[in-house]
Image (tube, rainbow, N blue to C red; front, side):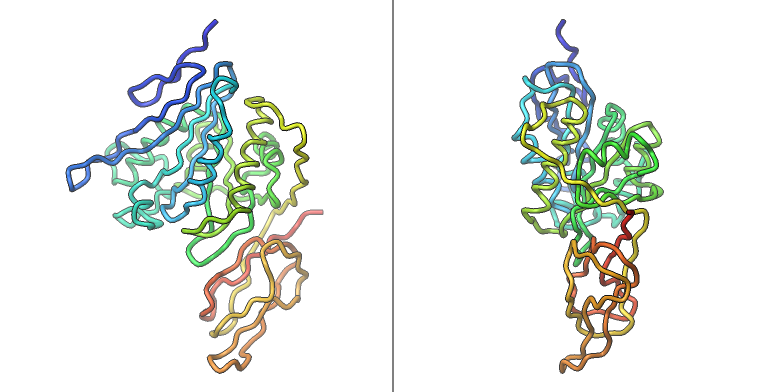
Length: 318
């Protein structure tokens, strides 16, 4: 029996085929149209429906490359189930390298959106209607905020057994239990029954090989776990560290920051992480770890003011 075609927007994708779809967002002031680009890989055989998305924040470009490399490894003729790949959700912010939309709204605080709301709200509604509502599992790719860097990590509701299982399958260096944020894609998708992993890695407006490779391999492991593709015979997923809490070490003074730690470093409470100096090199204050754990985030800004976030440390479960 031939599998039913997959409906999205005003098109249908035949089983055993791939298709690029443009979902209309809005008419631009120039008279052109802005659309949400989607690649559908509709497998020949039955299986789950999964979405992967990137660039909900327009300056978080790593997800675009992760999804590009991922879909190059997939064949609809050998695929079981359906993958809905949306490399750029915040199309207008992405074009200008801006985290936010032109109206300065954060798209990841506007879900589930409304068909008659603001531009951000309309994009959120379109994404929920055409993508999330059709999927059982989602993987949303993010990077650190501007002038910060993140160790590859999964953020998810680790108290949900199914979500925890998917996080373990991804096998990122760290799985961090993260509460749901009001208005986020993860919360809205969870509310309609989807299981969501948020992959955080790297820096805004930058590619880096480790973050991209970890993302591609991790998503493929999830697809393998769901039975959508065959398992790689030689892949031995590493064990992930698990964290239930994390926090930023903040500057206790103003100065020029010289860090002496790096992403992935294991630290103990009281360890020296770096120091603050004045413009003549005189040491103003040391920076020390306030907890024991693993470094999952860093600032890349050398000039800091008192109270600025410097080093993100996740406490690690035994």
